[in-house]
Each structure stands twice: as C-alpha cells, then as structure tokens.
Length: 461
Image (cartoon, rainbow, N blue to C red; front, top):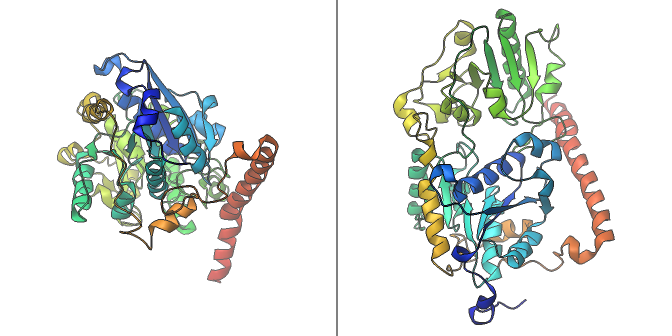
C-alpha cells in the first residue's frame, strides 16, 4: 500500500484534542504485561480524583499472539483494570498494525518484551500515518537484567516510562551513553500499586512467599525454598503460611516456569502442614491479609513496601544478579530464613525507598502527573514526526532484521510476503489455523514443563 499523504488523508482525521473520547490501544504479550499496560493506560488518561479533566476514555485490549498469551482465567485473575476481559482480542503483529492504521487511536501502549516493542515501532513507522498515535512503553517491574539491551529495543517510543527516580537516571544514562535521544524517559511509578496501608489485626499472623516463575531456576534451589517455607509453617503452627503462585501448571506468564511449585509440593516428605496453603488470585487481595511478605526478588515486594507491609528479600541462595535480589542492596530488607524463623523482621532504609517509586509516603497520587502532561502535550502538538528508533538497518544491520523477521516484518518495517491476517485468509481457514495453533501451544508448554527437564536430568547423569 503506498504511503498516504497529509494532503489526501488529513481531512478525515479529527485531532485528538477535539474528540469526545480519548482512544487508547493496549498491546500486551503476557498476563503481567497486560495488567501493567491496561493500568498504565488508565493512569495516563487520568481521573477526576487525580485532578484531570473529565473526558471519556475508550481502551481497546489487544493480546499479541505467542507462547505467553494469557488464558481467560489469567485475564480474570489480573483484577480490575478498567477493561472488560471479554472484549480483549488476540492479534498477530501484522493484524495489530492494520488495526492501528484503521482505528485512528490517540495513544498506543506497548506492554511487550523488548524485541516486540522494537518490531512494533518499526511497523508503526512504516505505516507513515498522517496523524499517528502517541506511543508509550516501559517495564512491568524491577529492571535487574539486560538493561542496555531492553532499553535500546524500546528506544523510539514517544514515552519510555521509568518506574522510579532510580530507573529514570539509569535509563537516561544508557541512551545518552550511545548518543541516543533520552527525552522520552519519563519518571512515573508502577501502575498497580494501591491498597490500604498495613494494619496488624489481633489474631492474624500471615506470612506470604511470593513465588517467581524463573527465579530461582534449578530444581534444587526451588525445592530448598519450598522446604524452608514448609519448615517455617511447622515451626509456627499458629501462623498462616501462604505460597502465592503466579500460574497453574500449563499456563505461561511473562517468564517460563519449568518447575512449578505445585508439582514440587507433591514431593514434600510427610505432606504439607495444615497451616500451609497454595494460593492464586490477585496479589492485592492476598496482600490485604499479609503481615510479612517474603520473596527472592518479585515485584510483589514493591507492592508490599508501598503498603508498608513488613517485607523480606532472601539471601539464602546468595545475593546475585542472576536472582535479581542484588537490586535490593542498600534496602535493609535482605535477610535469611534462619533470621525469619527466629522472629527477625527487616526494616526498610528510608533513603533507598525514596528512590524506588513505591511512594510509601503518600505521594503516589502524583506519580503519573509528569507522564500525563507529556502525553497531553504530544496529543495537542498536531501531527507527530515519524518514529525514529535508535536501531535501524544502518546502525544494527546484524541485529535488527532478525528481530523484525520474528514478527513477520521486513527490515523496512513492512510486512513480509505471506504475512497475512486471519481476516484475509477467511473465517474457515482462520478457525482451522487457530485450532492448530492452540494445540501447538499446548504441546510447547508440555515440552517446556515436562520433557525438557527430563532431558536435562538425563544430560547430567
């Protein structure tokens, strides 16, 4: 399709500032990124409580088809995000680009892994729309690995959200260090913080361990953590001990979980004590009854700190970059199961807390003010310049084409030949392909969680 010019297409487009409703599209590729993206869209749109103008907001939910596409159960468990889960639809990368071309969104939130963000940025640039949407992206939690790689793959968005002052400084340093424009970096906070501050209740004593899908990775380390959690429950029979799980076996989250704790729990000698439970559900609801949150490096720790719930970061397996708990150096929260068994409770360092965006001091209501102002200014500025990511066929000729090809885009951002959409292949063929895809996804998950660990164990013999 030849590029459309402003002269021929502009009259059909109503300026965003003049429309009755602000139209936002959220594209996500996992359950946690959907939660981050949808709530970010709500925060950016503002609310009367936050002092923003009362303007209707229409949020369209789109899920990028892939290995971690959330199930209906996962979408429902995410909690209230202001978008009806029944209206969220699954799309390919090319279908998403066609949707943006046809729907004239005001804002697009890319809640995706870095490579997918980069591909969508190039795909959106290739659309050459006369009036393109404001593009926003960011991170779903603590950034403890692949900082440069992930950030440069997100460069080119109009707004790259940093969840804290600490992250904002790091993000700008990376962009400026390679000579890239850093003006897109905008400090905000995690959009899903909230809930009532912690209050001790007589007769309640609840410890929650927030599990992570891929940290730690080995069976021995995961069994160690589970065994210590169970031992803690046995040492304190009057205390309720909860293992908060991210997904059920067979479901995928942002990270692959090869060794689900549910399976490991079946092998605990003597079974699980009566005061020990495995729980799912919305993290905010679990935190409502939590008196101590324990984790290795889960983002749940930041949610807990925001609510001033006693929080512990485990050092039992070391303080290492591979575990992500190195992010909490200086926090005052790093401790071990031995100390927790003995009754010790870490006290957070106030200076460290101030730089982490948890807003435990009550300033969370203003955390998105700067981002809102930036988005509003971009919407009011008229036609925006073409998106210009740092990576181009000239700056990264050995890296970028492979990333784009994964999403069926050529080096120029246009769809590759044969990258057709389900609508273009017809309803019957699309239904057949969907059935095959679901079966393949199930087989992949079975392979990851059942077959791959067996092969690795055989290799260790």
